[in-house]
Image (tube, rainbow, N blue to C red):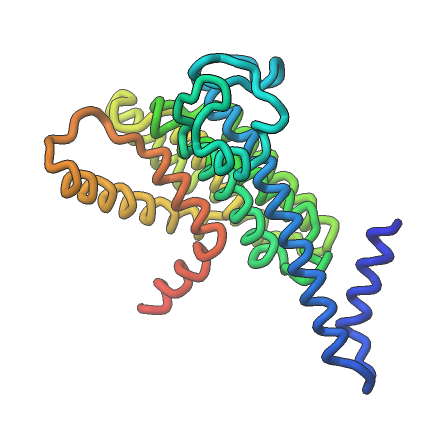
Length: 295
């Protein structure tokens, strides 16, 4: 009830125009928006800390629901002072408090990335106008962004995409559908776009996997892009496909120029799919429409 009252208050501040203090009213709304964005960033870094647990434990089959956080080098149980997102890594100088082994910079990077992603979703995908941006849609996109971060790191290091991640993205899509139903933005064309998105890229990947016997395309990529297509719709997921290919080519060229050695092993496609999908959540459909506008 309190949230509803605050929301009505903010909406009234936007709509009701009086001759008195319009600039003060606008400043208050901007302040409230910035305040909420800071809270969302902090919340995102906390969830980012949990994502680091998933990145470490899922590939080795370790239960992420049980047990306390430990140093991956000496296995010492971490104290609460060691678990503050971003700050603990900085204050410890990037080293374990107990064995002094280096702590991977992945930990603060993932925490910061997740916090930034949450703020961008709030500001650009969910309105970002005071508490109007707090919605089921925000939750859905937050889930997708976090899952994509986990997918990027695990697939890059281990060449696997855990099923739990594409399932999480699909659940995020259900939150977005629920938000559309509650806010009367649900339309026939909108849901058809999402249903087509389920198969637009994943169907192509499935055919490639069939033709190559699974050598050129893994099942994780197929399921990942089915879930992403459901969230983004067919236009944005098609742009994500082309963007991921471009990112993969640029990465390969860059790595070859930097290392100047012959590249060995397979470069996983999942990280580029994940990065492109995250970007296309913001610009996918505008890029698609802009491309069609060229003809």
